[in-house]
Image (cartoon, rainbow, N blue to C red):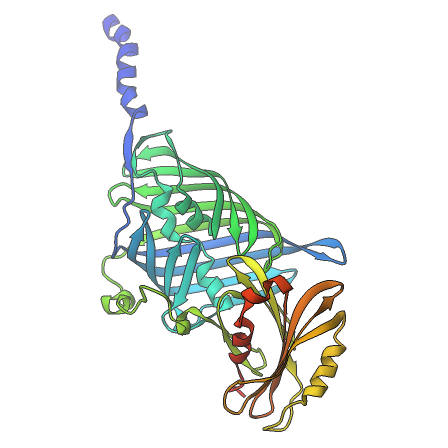
Length: 438
């Protein structure tokens, strides 16, 4: 009896040592034709910071979202899926901004979506046709599961071991266009039966839509050891965003809950014949461009996604053009008074309206006259150098008239040193305006 008692202190450490030294291969290998069903929920709280009359105001922001989709990996790069096809069962967002509530849902004919991960961010488009900007945000702004293999070290680790996430994984998880600093670290926290629990914590810094973003992360996930797949993830993220060319400053906290479910059989919507239709090179404009329809049906517009809608009233639409994240130009589309079919507002009348624009002083006319706009349409253009509140700018004023007398005026503002870089992108934008819905 005494011998047994004396030997216990020696035996117990020997029995316990393997527990503390438990190791696991914490690897998820992405491969073409991988399929899974994802259920992703989001809760967001925070505020936007807007400056009005020199004073900063905080506008409360709350949102909830839910995305359910089947996903098929088509291609892999950097150890992560780089091209995926997704069939959405549900994609919805309810947001309250300053007391005003909006609800968005993905229409049935835009639920087959391709997600392409590039070094400069995520590019999503629908195989059913052009998305609207709201629809693009709905499928392109939720948590991107392409990052999941990169949350793991891809090697054998012990409980308590840590690793640093790659920039590619940090970019995909944090939804950044560019990563400036990445201090996200993973850690194996627990190992029970067939489940490995890990955490991701730290900070990252980058750019999204031209705005500087600093974020902090505290996430917990679980890996199914037998399947070699992350099954659940709770991703908590706090963003502090500087004002950008197309977004206001903001401070928000986001909680994402992700559940991945295995698929026993291939989903028909993701069949080989569907995947075969996915563009492998440059995405054609009929899929890459976005669409906009005036709420009152007065006109519609298709446009490259470098243009961003930044403001909207009953009679005005404000868009800004980014060039690799840098602000390039602004376009304001205004509904103009209607004239009899086949008619148009005389150029002299339009010029007088331009001359009376608040804060605008023209100093030199660069172009004045009509430009081709298509059958039954007339497009007048006046380009002039001048100043807006003492700031040197070049403004181009367009007046587009449709065959039934519908008219819109478009004012494009650009700094003189950016005029060559703008090229004809403003003219292409105006020519894409359509009155056919009338």
